[in-house]
Length: 572
Image 1 (cartoon, rainbow, N blue to C red):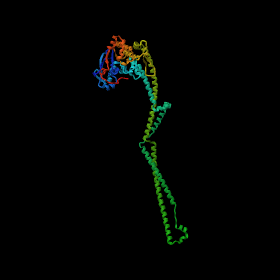
Image 2 (tube, helix red, strand yellow):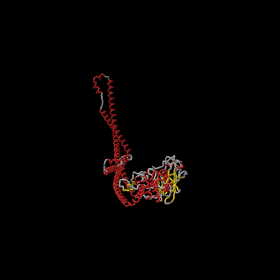
Image 3 (tube, one colour):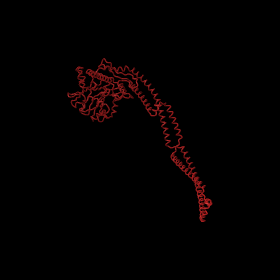
Image 4 (cartoon, one colour):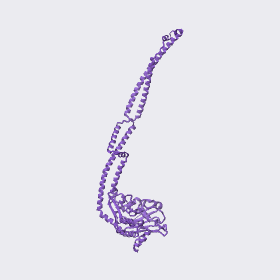
């Protein structure tokens, strides 16, 4: 893939035309009044290229430059294409003038630019593009950086572009991930309140399970013997009514028996005062009474006698009535007692539905507890077996990796020597290289991977390391069809004049041989001193003739967009 032209639907935009091969330089100039090169749009070019090449939505573009459409012309396998994307409708793009979704565009690029094997997490077209089109300050700190979110992603993406077996990397990561999942699953079970209490008490799982299962059996037998009475509460209510009625009847019978006893006692008492008894009491005093008076006493005595006889007859009749009532009440009482006994027998064998439900619920809870312990035992057993299997797999992967490193030693040395040869152009007496060593640690890293230039005292050495590494990836052409590198001006800020001159000399030589592109944005002061490092013809050919655009801050028209817009668009 080579870049041809970046342009816009707004006429004020300063179109960027890329040289077909070799160097393409974009200079950001300042006027006499200007105090900085920033703000003219050099770094914005990088963001616009990513924007046209399918990056995530850029909110600053949508907010600050709505309805701007940017287009990028490019070639893949010598076929010319154009992609256009509008800042206000960023989820869709036009590829060769046909509207498609953004995801479709990225899939289209991925199929044509990278040979990504199936089933390798972390490898996508968009995750690999920053290796050729670095964006933001962070990606100019470490040459291995690819906007990674993990060491695994950093490793697998760089290894892929260096021709290293990424399946070894993916396999270890997958095994370590599975081990982590098993540990988490086991821990989740242990965090369950039942099992947490069990473990904190130092109890044995088999003993706990046996105890719970015994309880479940006991409760199950109780459930089987349980007789549910739908009218349990009616039966209970009737029994309570009968019991209360029986108690009332007993009290009434007691009162009646007491009344009979009182009547019997009353009937035995006869306060009989006959006329003879009167004569005995008063003697001669009666002689003083008139005959008529005595006659009347005799009548009173007769009257009293008749009253006594009537009282006895009445009491006797009342006694007989009470005895009859007692007999009937006792018959009714025996009937009620029989009914109550029947109700109580029914209640003794029957219970309420809610009691049955509570019993079933308890059985369910206990059974769930038992199953939880069984599940944990199974997980623990499976964890133990699987962990042992995974340990074996990890061991086998270590062996495979060692064999792979031994078998591919010459291949790696040949490829990595490209990087060393580039570094030697800058530091001929400094050891340098790309290292891959087997990592047997408890992590997801298959390899310890580093890019080194052992000359820490030199200014700009890290920038040289980045340049040489990116140029190496371009030159190796491992698993990709990208034929350009784009470096922002920040790469050159800490380099001395000699290093910058060497960058462009070496880049021109390498991309010339490859038929590729080296694109860079520069400040004028990065160039001014380099003329001393070149002959006039070399300076003209390398720098002057390859400068395709000069952006200035003396007017809005001199800036990339042709207007003044303040945006915070860079990836940090």
